[in-house]
Image 1 (cartoon, one colour):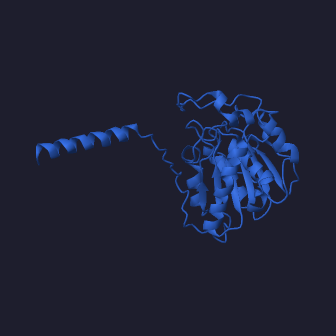
Image 2: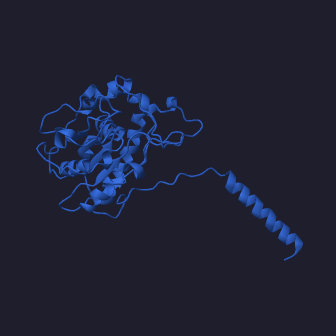
Image 3: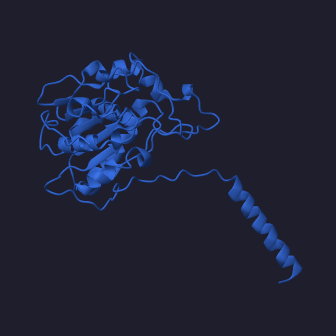
Length: 280
């Protein structure tokens, strides 16, 4: 190799390295175990694919690391998504805008599986946001059952703060979390969401709450009003008094896994209020 050729090669390599260093990092979305197998076809026993919807500040990978493989092991087709990213943090955009991201994802799941409807399982904001999709974006006809785990259905009287392990970007501030403001009790969004009532015709609703919830407070504000044919509200400690799981970790609670499983197993209607999970 001549000196000139070698010099040009070195220069080209330097330019390439510089451009790679300058290029913005691209977020890599990682599905939780068992989720997003787009070749999965629902069985006769479990005819509705399950869509897992994470909560504020959460990714699907973190929020559903245990419930997703549990449901997959039970024979469900499981799907999950990230949504509402602002300043590099998921589920912080205005809730109504996030609901617009849920809509095409549900459509994609229905198209891939051939199912007319899906079951939605959401945590915190993810248990409430689908109600906007169902009530205001025409999604009710595509949902068989909504299961909310510690959902912010009527907002919270507390503060919604990033978890300790979240390292926000330099321009991330509490003011940048529109979803946090939307989830305050009495917010304009909450007034709009509940202006049409807690439920809409068609889907069934199951709410699973913990008395130790320190985020969505009071915990019973999570409950939905509706007939027993359409709504079941469950307090974990009424089933297992020694269970001390709080808001953030409820999706990882083995008792919650069983309660979700019972809800999804119903061919019609919400969870069986008499069902007793094994207390661990």
